[in-house]
Length: 413
Image 1 (cartoon, rainbow, N blue to C red):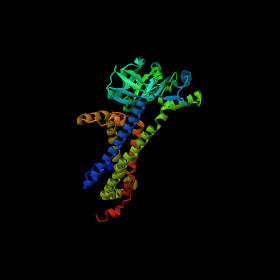
Image 2: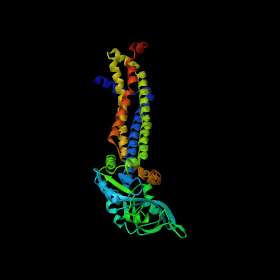
Image 3: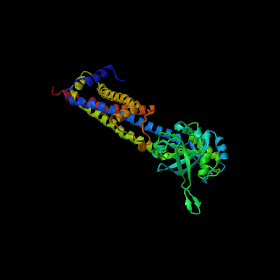
Image 4: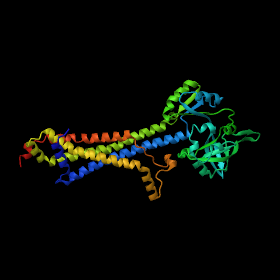
């Protein structure tokens, strides 16, 4: 695109000592601004992507890909519905469940929880409860055993083997009035999903114990469905609606968490726009730097023109001069951003250990660590757009340089 002569002069202007050192400072600041802007964009988008995928993983570790419920509330003859669900294309596994609210009492402490009744042999193929167990086994459920979340057990001072009283919100009507329905369960396990909200409010019991305690009879709340991949949940949901009809309420995990993930997507887009302004400001610095270089090199431009250099060559020289600033800043930002993104979690732990603080608290941010996932598309988009803006910033100063009149510049020399 540019010939050897233009490259030689452009690079020479870049590294030559200037009488006005302020121009050199602006050049370095422009390069640093682009590098910091690109690095910040890469790190922030990597964190947002990692945060979204980590939350998705943890949510799907507790909830299923698709949930089927009967419009009337309780699902009667759920075994027949289960057979139809398993016969639907795309369904990998399914399991009935009962959902209810209760109060746990132990050691003089009380805590409201959501109790999920499950069928362990079927549920292990649907949820990630078994892999999340910190102690105990799913097989130990039954005979009024209960599995608690890590923070829930810690808050009540419970360990495996301890008794806990479970009180239902609906009481028993007796001759002396309504008495709360209570049952003593035995803690048979503790799970750690990595998400504070679930670990502090969720407990598991056996499906038959849930039917007895909540007086569901032979009914269930619904059926949890697992697909081959989370992204297939939408298509499987449509298939289940066609299979079961409109008497059933079928929801996929994206519908159940739609507002949450939309907020994350909006935040990611907003952060991209805000941080991209850093690159734009750095590009304006490139324009300022090149304009001052053109003013300083006015005599040199005039001499080059009198020696036969065309306006196109002069324009190319200053495009090379500014383009190198943008390319170097872009590459430095790319390297710095990838270095920080791949080592962000270890750096965060080092800072927390150094100052004795916890930057991310699980009860505030849902997770207690900072995940980062670098997407090739995001990095490519940031790099290409930043480079394009840097090159576009050179057009106006280069055009001004090409319009310099050698007669006016050399009149008083």
